[in-house]
Figure 1 (cartoon, one colour):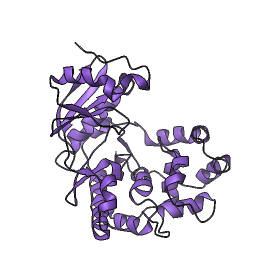
Figure 2: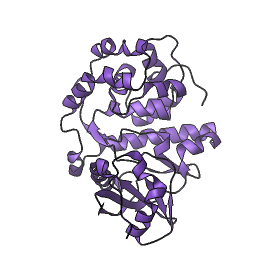
Figure 3: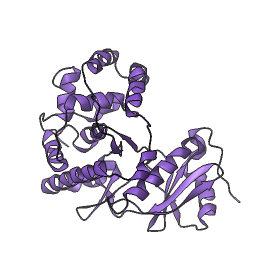
Figure 4: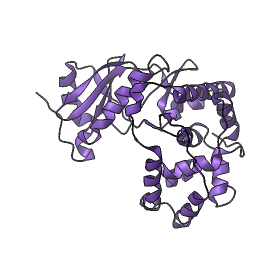
Length: 297
């Protein structure tokens, strides 16, 4: 019987290499690996998806299952069909959302459809942030203020590791010192609310997925991905999103959380987003989370 490897490194859980163990686990051969995503994911027939969690990420399987079960029926999310562990790996079998990702569909959409979908996304994120389900209390971190402090303590080291230009790195501590993050209420967070994690079909949103990095924390932490990967520096799109969400945001706080975000990668952001009019963090906050000039998408 095919088994899952120990997965001591990334090469040990390539999607193709895992396929024999996956078909053994499911007892069926109509399994096709998806090529994208940080974790191995497979189409199972036409209606199901299997997601695997290597031992080092096993806790994320519990997170994703908990969130999907808590949100299903409130937000359009995949229904969980089955879950378990095998050879130290976690697995989650869920329904497959129809359509294509919003990222893939975006170039084919009319301006009117883009505006409508962005408003729908704002409403969806507001709904997520309003969910009050006791099952979500188990999500990390246990203390949001402690999490933020821990991220702040290693922020310079983190950005140097990403290869961010030292001129930008040098500005980060002073900028963060000037941003009062306050004591915001704690809400459920997707943490990667982006076009790539939204499915659409026939011009309509069919669901939101990829909740393994979900957390509980300040709502503005979710607006990091909104500014970077939904509106992408387009002030008009962001305004429409916020109108539907029902609350304004502070661009400087959003940038602060972007700098403190677990997956923060500013060299990548600079490659795909409009440059600020001047090389300052305040200008960057306005360019990406303010009402700045409309960017070509």
